[in-house]
Every structure is written in C-alpha cells, then in structure tokens.
Image (cartoon, rainbow, N blue to C red; front, side, top):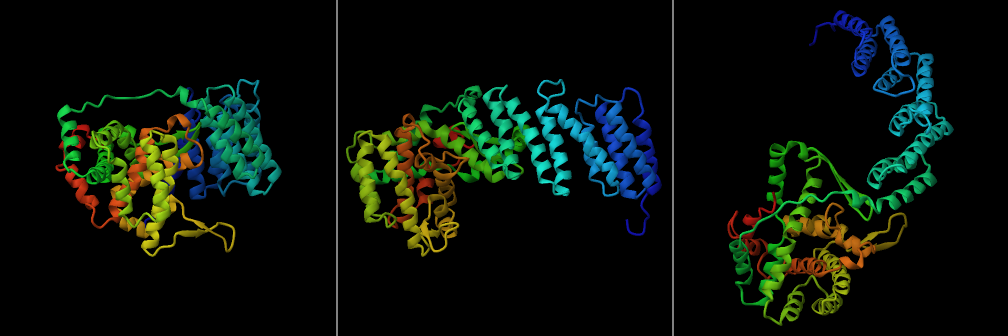
Length: 489
C-alpha cells in the first residue's frame, strides 16, 4: 500500500527461519531447496547483503555435502536462483558454474550411476546462460553437444515412441545453436525410429449406437428431392461438421473431464510429430480443429453410405455432377475438363487417379473464386524479388474475402479436411506423396468430391443456399442422425 514501509523486519525473520529449517535432520530435499531458494530471493529483494551471503553459502554447502553431489536433484534449481541474482558477486557465480560443470560431467558419463540425459540437459541449459552472457561460442557448443550426446545415447536404448519424444527437442536445441549438421543427423534418426512409433500406441475406441430409425430418417431427408443434383448438394452440405456445437462441447469438457481438457495433444503422421495442440483453455482454436476431425471421422460410415444411398438405382451420377460444376462460375473451362476426367475415373472405381485429379481442382476453384472477388490469385515468391507463384489452398482459404464469403462451418471444414496439420490434411499428404497407395479409397475420393460440391453450392446463385440446405437436412436440433450420433461430443 502507498505510504506503508515494506515489511523488511518480517522478511529478515523469514530468511532466518528458512536458514534454520535447512539444518533440520530428515528434511526432504525439495523442501530444503524451496526454503533456501526463498532465503536467497528475499535477501536479494531487500538488499540485505549479510543475509544474502549467508543464504548463498548455506545453499552451496548444502547442495555439495547434504545430498549426493553426483546425483542431480531439485537442489539444482538453487544454482539458477543464485546465478541469476544481480546482487551475487562474480566469484560466487563462477562457483555455481564450476558445480554445474561437475553435474554435467557426471550426468553425461554413460557408465556412471548418475547418468541422466534429462538432468544433463537441465544443467546444460543453466550453463548456457553463463557462456552466452560472456559470448563464448565454443563453450556453448561444447555444453550442448555433451548434453545432446547423452540424449542420443538414451534414445537408442528405448522404444521408438520415447525416442521421438526425446529427440525432437534436441533437434531444436542444435538448430538454435547453429549446429545444423548435428540437427540434421538427429532429424534423420528421429524419422527412422518414428516409423515404428505408431506400433506402441494403443487404440482407444468406444461404441456409437445409432438407432435404425435415425439412420433411415437421415437417408429419407437426403433422398427427398427427385433431382440427383439436389440430392448431391444436400449430401455434401449435411456432412459439414458444425463449429458452434463443437465449441460448446469443448467448453463443457472443462467441467465434465477437466483433466483431459487441460492436457495437450500431439498429432503424428508418417513417424513424426506434425502438430501440437495446447489445452482447451490456452488453445481453443487448435483443439477445435482436432475435435472437428474426430467428429468427421465418426461420421465416415454414414458419409459413404449416404452417397451410395442418394444414387442408389440411378445412372445419372456423372451427368449430375458435371451439370453442378458447369453451372458454377468457380470452375473454368480447363478445370471442368480435368474434373470430368477425374469423375470418369471415380465412377470406374479408380480412386487413386480420381483423388489425385480432383483435389488440385478444389485449389484451382478457390483461386478462380478469389479472382471473382477481386482478390489476387498469386503471391510473391519468398526471397526472390519480382517472381510470383500461384496461391495454394491454405493461402486461398486464409484470404479475408474468402472467409467472408464462406459460411464458417464450411470454411473450417475445408481447412480441416484438406490443409490443416491438425485435421486430415488430405491435400498436403497427396501433393507431397506421403499418403500410401493403399489409403486411396472411395472415402478419399468422396472427400475430394465433397470439397468441389461445397464450392459449387456457394457460387451458384440458383442452388439451394448452404445454410438453408443444412437446415433442411438437420431440421431440428437434436433430431435425426446428428442428434442420434451426438457427433460433437
């Protein structure tokens, strides 16, 4: 409070009590660490030099004599508190550096009892503060390589899943220090080990029971129109995941499953971590994309069955799709020719070819739409002046005018399916040759086809508006197939 002197006397009493408590026999290590750390911090904050010197002396003596000096523990944090204090003299800080060097040596000795790559990394992190402060690059690299070698050795002794988790931070540490060769070596090893990481993961599943009546009601709504074109549009729009419900479900999970809601999530693909998501509290947008992906995956069987149902007993599917795209200004002549080729292969069950042909046409249609909106369809090449290239799908979807044009549900759906590392990321997996041939299927082709149909619905003034089409299929909240599946929970 203003005008009230700081309780210096109280702080001094607390410091003395902390120091006295540190001599108690049988006191737990983490408690002594906390007491001495508080003593150092309080002494420095009130400028009490004698007590600061005594707190530092006691901390260093206790760390070296009262615990096993070769085994790192919570006391190591004391070194950070002492070294970072501006009131501690340089000679004392050098004692801390010397002690940390001893910890680094013992924890990186592969034949020693004290070997521990995690504590070695911690000791190295503290030492880096010193060597970077005095601008000693050689010592900085030495420390990083010592801790890095310990981590690489430890990773070679464990299963692939643990190895990937330990090596990923090491890649970043090497790169941050400019040790590119070391980073690339670890990167290659991490990718090699990561190929088998998925074998260790346990599949967690739960049954979803959908009443036959709800499924039939859903199919009846899809098949109500006589025209195949309208049925196809309804099928595409009805399988767009709903963002608002997903957001409500995520917020509700903070109450119903608070621990899970606060744990981050990592997405792995092809043996490597491709995305990280924080807790719902800190990264709602990331968790939303991950949740939308799960919601869509739950619906896959009905997504495919719905397509088969709307064209059951009909032979005009190809013609209807060609008419849908021909009526939309989002598809130019060149695009339509390629789409028709992809559709022919789709109806011939050549899903490998169909998916490869159709996905790029979604990107082309998005660029065409940008042009219609008066937005640029190309972008400068980074690092090359005067050189341009076409905007990719992610850039096109990220354009402000495109976000205004697309309903939020559709915008999020297209991002999640085609170009988000937290989603299916289908466009990038196909374009970069990552998706194995065996995973090209009716499903991948239908997802590609749905993306094209969604763009045609938005652009065609005569088509049933997206919001209206979705409302027609999902006539009442909590009824029909969506209520039965409870897709967003």
